[in-house]
Length: 189
Image (cartoon, rainbow, N blue to C red):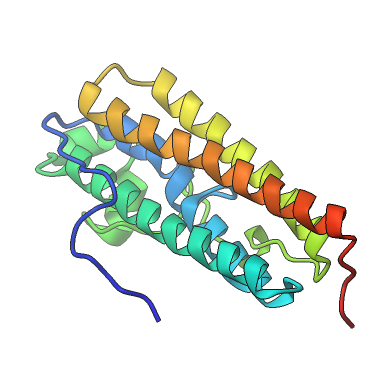
């Protein structure tokens, strides 16, 4: 059971339109290393964790990733709010507009739709934790790339927050993996 608080994990209050930046943010909305991919990956992998400690950690991080997806959604919406047709076309978002108007659609910045092939799970909890650590590093790198694409402090602040959370998630997954290796916990079949 989840408790939903009607506020973002970190405030998003963007004052200036920037459709190109909004388009770039789709990398974390529906791309292979997006917040959605991470949330679904961890929600699925939690079932093959060998104990409640692992299940709890993956559930906690998965739900936080959903909160991050909500932040990215708010950022995209605020960056595009009130955009003219000309601004939409100039930002290379005409194709998305023609199909979805101002609505968000789960795809990457190139318009490639989200696919379940982004949701990795092997059934081997050590392999999955190693994969999760790598996914968090890729997400961290993506946030750093996004930060390089803007100088708007209203965009940079939430991106910096999200980047730091990827570092923390990496550390938590590493601690859990090391705990299992130290305890020599075996996969239950």
